[in-house]
Structures are given as C-alpha cells and as structure tokens.
Amino acid sequence: MSERQTTDRDALFELLDGELVGHLAAVVDGVPIVVPMGYARDGEHVLVHGSTGGGFALRAASERQVVAFAVTALDGLVFARSLFDSSMNYRSVVAYGVLEPVEGERADAALLALSERLMPGRADEVRATTCKEIAATRVLRLRLDDVVMKARAAGASEEPDDGEDHSVWAGVVPLGRRWGAPEPSVLTPAGTPIPDSVVALTTSTEPDDKLH
Image 1 (spheres, rainbow, N blue to C red):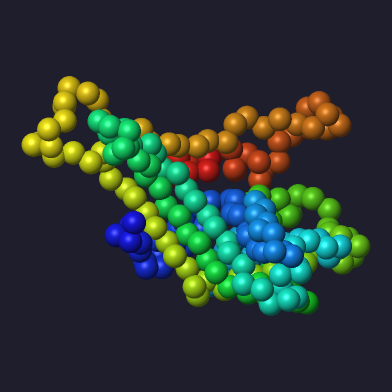
Image 2: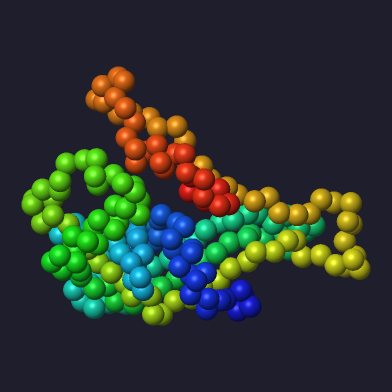
C-alpha cells in the first residue's frame, strides 16, 4: 500500500540499527538467490561480508549487478473482526543498488563495525584476526540511495458504524524479543567468567524490548 511508504531517513536508520539480519537477493545465471546475513549500517551504507572463495554476492559485485537488500521488523499482530482486515504492524525496507568492495584499511574498519554491531565489545576480548582470516574475507557495501521503506503502526481497522459485532475482541498483540541466558560451549571450562560483552548484551534495556 503506497500510503504506508515513508521517506523519513531517521526512521530508516532506526530500523536498520535495530535489526541484525537482512536478506540479500540477486539473480545468478537466471536463477533468483536470497541469502539471510548479518549486517551493519555505516552512515549511508549497509555493510555485509563474504568469503573470497566464492559466493553470489562477490560475483554480483564484480559483474556490477543490481541487488536487493531487505530488512523487516515485525512489531505486532493486528487482530481485526475479520480475517480480511487482520494485519501486522511492521517496518520494512528494501534497498537496491550495486555492491561495492571495501578495500584496505577501510575493510578492517568495516569488519570491526560489523563485529561491534552484532557483538559489541567482543573484539577486545578475543585474539586478533589472523592474516589468513583477513585474506579469506571480503567486505561489501551497498549505498542507501534507492530505498523503499514501508511501515504500519496502528490498531485494528474499525468504525462505530461499520456493521461489525463489536463484542468480538479486536486489537494489537505487540511482539518483543529478549536475549536468553548465556550457554557456554562444551569446551569452555566450568566457572569461566562470562565476558563483559555477553553480560552487557543480555542485561541491556533498550526501548520496546528490541533485541535484548
């Protein structure tokens, strides 16, 4: 629905900064491919990464193909008095463009930005990335120029004289998310302290129960 489209850049950035997974889509040899992946926003770009050993994203970048990158946040289910009028409260964005490789020192900064978005503070707690690991990883970015964002944030469609039976419950069931209790790996010695990055993540109190 066109009335749900918004060009508010602050709303766009809030959505991208509040989610962790997007879906990258391209056409390879006439076949559509969609892959979910973690991402980070760096100003007016979305950052993703892949292996230098192959992958459709690197091929799309090298061939200058237009790709699509989509992110959706489901905020709640809308229960109306008919299935036809029931809906979802959501925010979604689809960005179109050509993936650009991030090179040199900018690539190092981009990889750190990805890490900090997904696991804030973790880079300071683990060993340094090896040269072999760096060589095996490529960072790609997609500029947020051609984007379509839509959102719904409303209750059930109803009017006092709509002819519906108002004794049937209608309303919104909000959806929230929380991180669970940390679960150590099988090779982590018993009693190993939980690192600060994990403690901070699992005890964060972001608004609207988003990603905590």
